Image: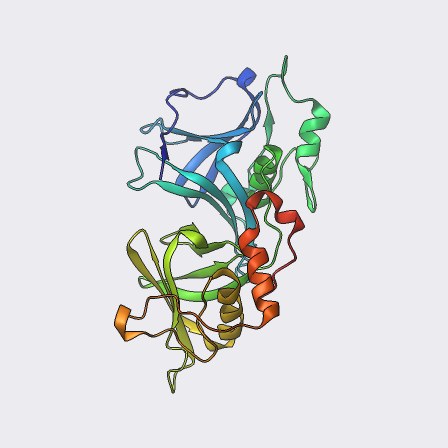
Length: 311
């Protein structure tokens, strides 16, 4: 996979005539930390500039590298929701050990003190700048709208406006959401039409087609009310554990759509010859094969023409 290095252009924060608008001190989940977020002028790009004076590092997200974005609610007691921007190619930050495959923001129903203070500041104006109407239109998206004080309290909603203003396509189709455990960390697994996303630690965002292997485990285990979903990515095996069996059918249906050869109904995918991690073939009804062919022929650029997938 090609790696796009972090920009070296912005050793200092951009000047007011270099951006259309900015929101300062925005907390990110991935990469972790606080960043000033700029919508750069004359370009469909977003600059993340670290608020840590010791780091002085920045990350420029260009439209051509932002594949899609999605707002993913967990529906937990805290009202947690995520904004996930999937990247086509990895980006890097000096302070982050591994390459970054997605940018993630988080909000909760009970907003933090810092989140309540989030504000949009417009750039200096001049040649090439967005007009006042264009800025206002950028922050009028569905339920989200700037107040008279030019604030938008929910950081996920605010950052959604930033990303959308760059012309990045939003994922609005259905998905399966399950609570699970990965490496002793509780989290949520989101199964989209073409992506598998686990949030929040460690964050995993990947295209299903990039997975080496994918299978269900413990589906038929007697006396257990849970099952597991395992996958292998870049040679590393991940096991999403303790998924409630009430979600077994939706997960199987998702597998039948995204896998060329999905586990047969009633089969937990266990195969002693290959350690149980091989995608196994099964006979599917013609209607399922038609859906599968449609999914496999789709591209990220024409999601709007897809039928909704409801798990």
